[in-house]
Image (cartoon, rainbow, N blue to C red):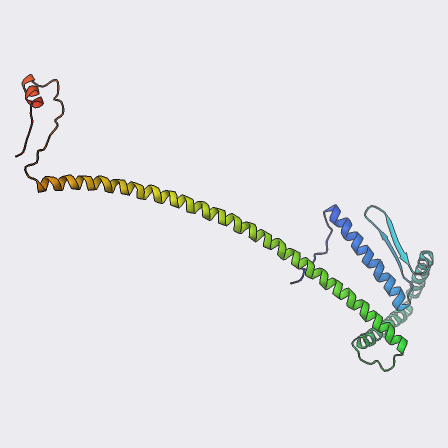
Length: 241
């Protein structure tokens, strides 16, 4: 699993922008130095940061590179003044690009271990050093990517662990609530069962003993009724034999 493609646009965060500028600037200057050494080229790089700070690199002299640049631009401008000169200019450019392409293809084949018969021991040593440098850079990049992936997996693992802990707490809480509800529901049922058993026991005892005495308690009569009815109601008592 590798990184996603980075969108090339202006970085809004100033801190991230400064860090990226520092990294990219170092990489660019390093590539310019390697190009000058490997290809025996005269290289000059000028960089101005967003704060106006100057950064530059030149394998000879920056003044010499700038002077040579202005001279080459003037020669090109003079050559393009007429249609014939323009055709010749682009013909020379095409021939130069074709030669560069052939040189790059030959270098690529040699890097792949092909067509090495015409190289000397010194050339082979230089090529070996280049391959070892490239291999070190590749291994460094690979280790960096693996380290970043491991850190990302650790971060995701910690998040999942915390989520599991929270879920366990919720499950335990729900289990405790269910236990309390279970106790309340079955406690009420046991109480109702006890009352029902008492009622059934009394009913059975009456059925088994038909001569048992049943006491009836009557409520007080209404005060607005006749006194005779009141006396009869209060003095009433029933007994079954």
